[in-house]
Amino acid sequence: MEVAIASGKGGTGKTTVALRRPSIEGSTPVEVMVPKIDPDRCVGCGACARFCRFHALACVKDGVLLFPELCHGCGGCSLVCPESAIAEVPRTVGVVERGRSGSLGFIQGRLMIGEASATPVVRAIKRGLPNDGIVVLDAPPGTSCPVLETLTGVDHLILITEPTPFGLNDLALAVEAARALELPTSVIVNRSDVGDGRVVEYCAREGLDIWLEIPNDRAVAEAYARGVLPAEAVDGYRDGVARVAERLLRARSESVAG
Ligand code: SF4
Ligand code: SF4
Image (tube, rainbow, N blue to C red; front, side, top):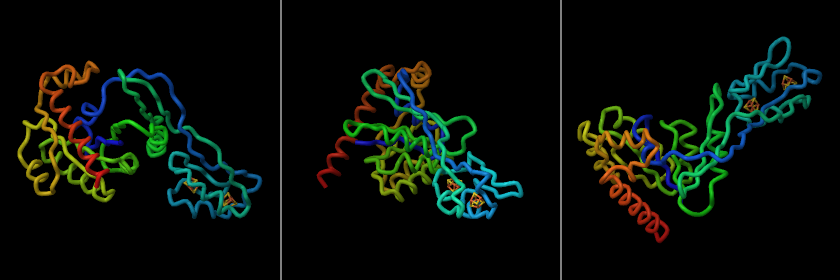
């Protein structure tokens, strides 16, 4: 069962809900294939640059320029080159790290500084996920490509939000993305006592179940800052998290039965 924890914006508490501090035991580079032009074969026809919809290639007087951080590794330019002047070479864009957090396995991706797209790293993480047990995916913030890549194919999505105008706006965007992907979706409202009632009204209107409301408790922030699960350190928090886990398992068995 794959469960994604996501939100329309950063800083709402996704990671606080999703995980605790792990120890890293190993890492693997994430590579994408990028073109390498053979200047002896290239005749400067420009077919490769015209083909590349990501503008990663520019045909200039002295040859073809590659902007590797814009390349998505589709391989199309090498196919359209009439002179077979384009080879593909690996380029490291990030790293996947594996470790443990207590009895739980842990995988995280890191993007190299300056890289524009996290999607290859997310794909590498998802390829390495176990096929059994419960997998919790802590999605990047927002609704961009790496987020959609993370959410695609999960069994359930939990959106974390906060009861503020920004929280509501970004929740609505995330719900739109979830509906486009046809994901069963529930909501957790973090810092539930700091804003107004519009997030709750929105969820009622849209038929979204709020599975947990987490009050703005300094002890939760302190536990998280120490790398301790709030469920282990803060009275009352564990029951709420346990209720979320029960509802998840129930939702999963209902969807399998249905
Ligand atoms: S591999 Fe694809 S994305 Fe990269 S430069 Fe070639 S056409 Fe553009
Ligand atoms: S398509 Fe091939 S020959 Fe034409 S500019 Fe690109 S690399 Fe050179």
